[in-house]
Image 1: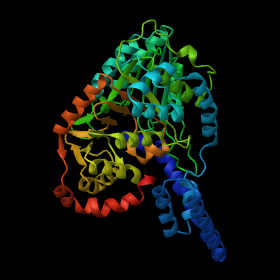
Image 2: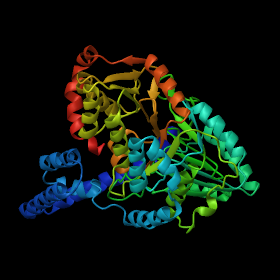
Image 3: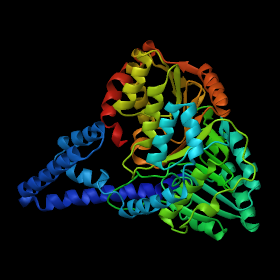
Image 4: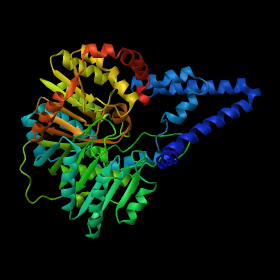
Length: 510
């Protein structure tokens, strides 16, 4: 009963009910003015027609346009209203203005060291082109002298993070999509409270929608009372539009500007396998970096902080000045993606890697619900002889998205792509490995939400030691997963070839 009441009183549920009530009220009002039905119907149809024209003129992906045009034309009386309410026609003005103002600070704070880029250009011009793209479009420079450690599971990531938190002397920055009460977060919070007592500055950002089911209301105020500066990012407000986009899907930890973490791992017990909501094992991935590249994460966190609560005009005091730079080979480039910059950075990085692969490209992703550009790139890579392998979950967390993911299997397999499902449970890792030389570990799924709608981040790696561990993890995961065949697809004919394609039509809206 307590769990039911918790869900029933949740802000998302309440907001959804308010939306339904307001739509119902709108319908009743139309019925009440039944004598003017013809005039009202004409106005509503004109609104729907205007919505269709607006969609066509927007620079969205064609799949996104089609996903809206079809339901609007199917329900012309209410299609235009639906689009205004749920089509994200108006991005929150405050959010956009905050992004634009803080982007200028990012440009001032992060500068590319010419010598580093020149060395990379001399060693590998094609890799330098990828780095140049991230520098110019995401504003994040590439660095050397940065050590990287890869974690193939949430538990070792968490244990190492706790050790680093214990070593904090100046500040701790944490930014997570999900923070949930339980053993994982309780252990972190215990360290944070002690560090506040020692005079360490502690800041926490959690996404309000991501954490809405696992944290009490106004948890940010609870943290503030403990001395932890806290922001619940982009609060959900019960109003006409149930806006669930523009979420902070990033997972970042920064300690003293010296050490930084990212990956798919949130602060909740399933990520360390203390609970098992989806199968026997939750597989995830994370990365720890130490060195000059941590500056990127520091600036990224402070930009997000300033978007909600402007406190810094200069980020440089939070950058670590290394007396002795870490001895580490290769190049490391943490980067970010934003739904407000008009650039699909997360998708473009993946496309560049797939397109430049010579021998193989391996992918971990919990969702394979993406646009035609990515599907075409994967097919072309396989057709030109590149060994393309994708691992998705064997146990779903969302059935609809699971069916959508599986609906993409057959055309990819026919092109020569090998697809695996992680048999032990749910795979939440977001990693790409290319030719044993380049890799990305981060928060970016192969889906529309990550590519189009959310704030995301990742780390681009070139010839660092951690790539060997990513390779090992991928090889072991292939062995622990089921290889999907055409026979498997035929057995799942209804889901893959009937339900899947129908859902795929609306996939950009899911």
